Structure formats: C-alpha cells, structure tokens
Image (cartoon, rainbow, N blue to C red; front, top):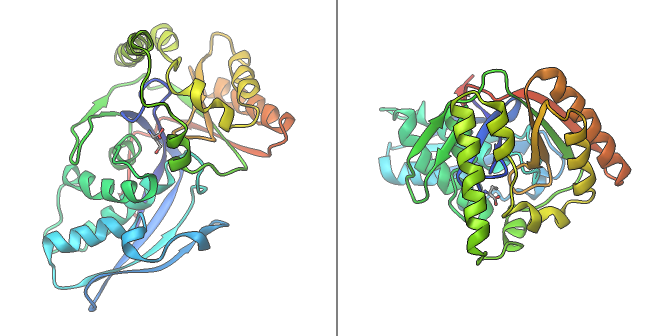
Length: 309
Ligand code: HSE
C-alpha cells in the first residue's frame, strides 16, 4: 500500500511544468500480486462519485501504468489494485496523478527487482495521460518526489527539485464542484501574444529565483499568472472574489493566489501558518458568498512525496 499526496500544479506561473506536494491529503493505493496475468481494478472507495471511475485497466489512471509495467518487465504475475480516494475527483488537487503514482510505487515494491524512484515517473505519466489527455508531469513529479518541482515535456521528463523557503505555507481551498481537466484544457487558446509570453517568463523566473533564495518579495512579484488564469477564471464561480479575499487577508503575508492545477480549487502561498489559516477562512467565506460550499486545508509544502505505508 502506498500513500500519494495531493499536489498543486502550475503554481500559477508554471503551466504544465511547476508543481508542489501538499501535506495531509492524498490517495492510498493497494496492489497485490495475482496468478492471473494482467491488471484488475478491484475497487475504488472513499469518495462520492467514485463509481464513475472506469474499471477497465487501460482507462483507469492507476491501472494504465501497471499495464505498462507488466508489459515491460513480464514478471510472470499480474496486479490487482484497490484505490482509496482521499482527493476529490476533478478538484484540481492532483487526484489522477496521486492514483497513478500510488499504484506505481506500490506495484514497484512487488517486482522481483524494484526500480529506483526516478525510473517510476514515466509509468505514472501514462496514468496522468489517461485522465487529462496530455502527458504533463506537473502533478506527477511533486507527488512522486515531494517538494517543489520543475519538469520538462516529453515521455520521460527531467525533473529539477527547486529549493523553497522552509516556512512557506499553502492555503488550499476546494469548492464543492467538479471541473474535468480535459474541459479546463479545452478552454485554453493555443496561440497567445508574444508580449504575454515575455511577461509570464519574467514572473516565472522571479518566482523560481525567489524560491531558491528565500526571498518572499521576489516570490510575491513572480506569483501572478497572466497567461492561464485569465482564461480559466470564468470556469470557477466567485473566482475574482475568492482571490481578492485571499490577497486582502494579509497584504504582506499572502504572496499570491491562483488556480490549483486545472481548478476549481484555489491556492494561496503565505509566509507562515497563521497567515495561511486566515487566507483559508477568507477564501471559504468568499466561495460561500458565491453559493459554493468549500473546504480548506493549511499545509506546508510537503517535503516527502509518495511512500509505502
Ligand atoms: N497543468 C495541468 C493543467 C494541470 O493546468 O491543465 C492539471 O492536471
């Protein structure tokens, strides 16, 4: 059995390439060896709407990576998979990545020659692709390795682990609605003006430089997405008010607020735990005013990723 944490992808300014792991929320995936070759999805529990999750292994985010592992390693046995969803479906908190990563970490432990963790990323990416229709490692990498990660594109992307201020906290708020990543991706324009690209590059560079040097001012200057957030905001009821509430809850303490992954959850980064707790309250109240019940979490950026339990 492996636990795989929730993650915040994009982190506003790093669409498809930046992400961090969150403490305390995640999926648990149990894999057992079977005499029958192939992958069986035995069940998905822990969350409403889980019965809509496909049980055909090739269509399941936890199943597909294991199909690939069996094809490649031919260990002479099969895998049965049970998924306990702790991450709400379609929440923008990296649920599909967590199920894929949890499955891969658990199955790896059953192989005759388990692979080092770095070699597991490309299998987990096969699961992410089932869910979102694209291979982007911005959830999978932090889910597997923990911390804040920057990943390249491709089948087996390189992963850079970015240092970050140890006291930096995340306020993560999930409104009770579902937004499928495929739909949130379909809402995006493919061509964008060059000047926006330049502006976003400056922001991303400032954010990463600020993280590497523990410079909260630089992080705050960087954490402002001009590319994706303006296009997706309309998909989230109350978005502008919730963001404003987060920013107003601590003018100096809140470093920025944006969409977590493809949404509808929103995250804010703050300089300490107390500021994150204030941001959560303000954001939950603002979602409430927009007619949506919401649940909030306060978390450090989690240093550890998926692990056997
Ligand atoms: N980078 C992805 C997106 C994250 O924003 O569409 C969701 O999986």
